[in-house]
Structures are given as structure tokens and as C-alpha cells.
Image (cartoon, rainbow, N blue to C red; front, top):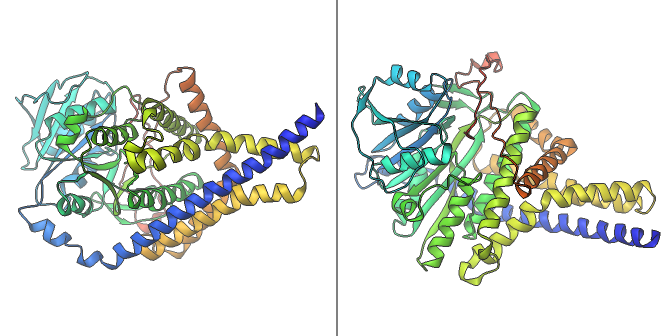
Length: 491
């Protein structure tokens, strides 16, 4: 029996080390692909034709749709930022998902809302129909819909159904867009209008950045370490992962915080799935499946330049619930569309991207936790020699730190968002600290979310605390008054 245990531990150590070497090498390949894209975009930033799009009558109009649930601290500033975006013609549709705070009252006061009789086309079904529709008397293209609470996805479906324009941009109500973000993310649709059906943009944490009139005028690294580490995660996920997958034509995720879609395709696939806990991921996978099944030429792309700024959790309990929910959504979507796995008819999606998400996203926390346990037990019992334990640490964590630092370097060379030297040092430190407890905790949380799905447990939506966007002057180092908000619908 002892020999079996020793053999099992030896096999496990080699398997886990090999897994992390392959995983981080895949990350390195994606980073290399991103490295061919981002500097090129940075060099031709002034020649991209954004100014022409801003004045051209041929630029397709956009409906910005956002679902709001208890967003009182940020909703007015966020809507003002959406209305102020530089774009020839766009409207903002806010769906108030049965808020229990003063979200609607704040909007009514700020924009002079009045009720309007308007019949929805009924092209996309929703569980809860609009109770009332309101428009602004301030000569701004704003529509606010009130309805009973039924969740973010169902609320977005109501907004998409009421959207008047051929492109629909879904944005979270607690997010801010760069002034030219809509123009930049619309460029692929203008360049290739027949094939591009969806595009995603970069999400960055806004915590402790300087915000004025709905615009981030001085991006900053958060003062607390928990949000700082999330800056590293977002850099790695968006600049490396999604840029790389977009180059491979294998993009499976567009963040719900900022994505642009062709409305006709959204109608074809039935809009968001209100039963899915990972509705944004599920929507993109379903679009791939639908269009591949019809053998239609299409593109789903990622643009690394337009930026959406959003608050990230600065409390461990909130972050834990977020990560459990994300991993549960990942598992349920992969399970729902499992017939795409290793099917040649789905091209890069079925043969490369889908297997990657199963092996290196879904299984990663399980293998990481098991690997740590196996190596720790084997080392304590003298079965695993110190050099092998060191190799595990280097493969699992050292390689990951290198990837994170390279992603930071790519961001600095290509986009240069953070201009203070201290901010760059803080992100670099966070890339190292991420592996000293944070990464292991998130792996456990993700496993808990997976387990909850396996036993059909009730989803956790969490409680997010908003501090608002009215950041003090640069001398005030970001001390805010905290306004609690309970989200029961996942916004």
C-alpha cells in the first residue's frame, strides 16, 4: 500500500508540474499574439479614422443598454458619461430592474423624466415586461424603463427589445466609458459590416482613480491590495488572453460590462439567457454555435483600446461570491454547449478554444489545489525531494509572475495608462503578491462555485459596496464615504 501511495504522489507531482508548464506556456503564446497587436494599434492610434467616424453620417447608430438595480450612488454620473460619449448618434436605454433604493428618483430629478406611451416590438421575450417607459425632457436621447425585479439578463432583454438602433452596446450601470470608447469599438463594424457581429473592449478597475464629470481623468492603482491584485488579473485577462484569442478567431468571452453587438443577431439567438448565471459568456458561445451551425461567415472580435472603467470588490467576502458565481457560470455554459467540444464544424472554437476553457479554465483550480496538497504532503513525508518541490513552485507560480510582469510591460509600452512610477511599482508588487495566498483563495472559491453547481445549490449574487465616482482631488488619496448596496440580481 505504501508503495502505491509513493508511486501515486510521484506521478501526481510530474503531472501537476507538466500541467502548469503547459498552462503558462499557452499564456505566453497568447501574450506573444497580443504583443503583435497592441503596439501596432498604439502606433496607428492617430490614423485610425476615429475623427472621421465621429462626423460621418454613415457611422451606424448605437443603442446603449444598461440594467440598473440599486445603483443610486453612481447611476446619474454613469448615465451622464454615456450620454456624453463622442459619437454621431446614440441613445441610452436604462432598465430599472425593480430597484429598492432611489435609483429611478435620482434619474428623474437629474434628467426630467416624463412617462411615454411606447409599445415594445416583442422581438425578444422577457419574463417581466416594462411597467412604464420614461423619456428625458432635457433634449438628450435617454429612455428609462421601469419593471419588476427579474435579474440582469432579463432586464437587458427588455432594453434590447426597445432599442431603436442596429448596434446594441451592453454596459453595466456602475461603469464609465472613455470618451472615444464607443467610436473605437464600433470601428470593426464599420470596416467589416457584413461579418462582424460582436466586439468586446477592455475592462479596468476604477477604484481610487480621479473621475470628473463621468470621465476618468487620472487612472490610478487602488490604494488597497485586494483591488490592486485585481488590476493584475484584468491586465492579464484582457490584454493577453482576449487579445490573443481574438487574433486566433477563438474569442469566447465578451465582458458584460462593455460589449457591442448587432441587434439583428441578438434577436436571432433570442437575446440573453435569463436562466444562465454566466449569461455574458453563454451569449457569445451561443452566437458562435448558431452562426457556425448555419455556416455563415462572421467575426467576433476584441479591441484592446476602448476602455470601460468599473469598480472591483475591495472586500474579501464580496470577491469570494463573485468568483464562485463566475466559475459556476463557466461550468454551466461549457456543460450546456458541450456538443461543440472537439467538433471540426466549429473550427477554432470547437477544436482549440473550447478544449482550452475546459482544461485550463474549468479544471485549473482543481488541479492547483490538488497539486499544492500533493506536493506539501509529499515534501513533509520525504517522498518529494526539495528540488522537485522548487520546480513545482517555479512552474506554478514563478512562471505566472513572469507572465504577469510581461503583460504589465506590454500595457506600459503599448497603451501607457498609468503614468505615475509608483503605480507601476505597485502593480509589479501585486503581480508577485498575487501568488502568496490570493491565488490559492480564489482557486478554493472557484471550486466552491463548481461544487454548488454540481449539487444544484442556490447561486450567490453577493453584496457590492459602491463608493461612487466622485473622486477627490489628487492630494486626497481617494478617501470616500461608503454607501452600502445589496444586489440580489447579480448586477
